[in-house]
Length: 235
Ligand code: G3P
Ligand code: MG
Image (tube, rainbow, N blue to C red; front, side, top):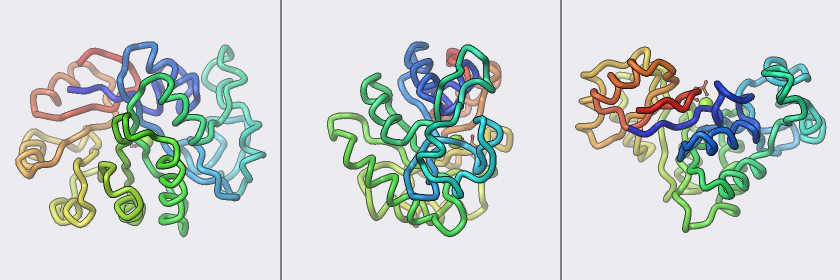
């Protein structure tokens, strides 16, 4: 079972910063997940929340600030003073760093309301222009079906993961419509029977966000292909 660094390696460095991706590589992880959203002026950047408040020294909605205003914010101090000076990275910075570090990536698209298709199109156009065919193709995931439909249209050859907090009863239809290769599910709402059914249907299960090694071992037993983790514990 693979361990995918969640937001880089969010337990050991400020989430979704370049330091977090470097930490993931330094701890031997082969793949990282991160969250992509748009600034007001349409620059794809890597930050989880729809507001700046929790993980930067800024405030207010990301979608109401231009990239130049976001790029100057501190995104490390809140985590620990040693990380002061870490910034909110652009998607371009993150993709280039992951390529340099040899990290495979899962881009999770987090759109703000009304820009679902646009967020995916912009993020994927940039990624397609940067990511070489020689590297493992990025996994594109989202809780939002419109984002995944756009991903299917723009980058049909990149695998898609359908995110859900709980397995929807119509998961087969949803996954088929989006031609998804995997379901990315909250491990807390997951059970062995669901994993068996999904894998029997030809899809991989990736479970977020797992920090407890005993839980990770159980998920592995069930047949979960990968976990997203804030820590680089063994699997
Ligand atoms: O992509 C897996 C996981 O990151 C989904 O939840 O809220 O951490 O983005 P969240
Ligand atoms: Mg995420």
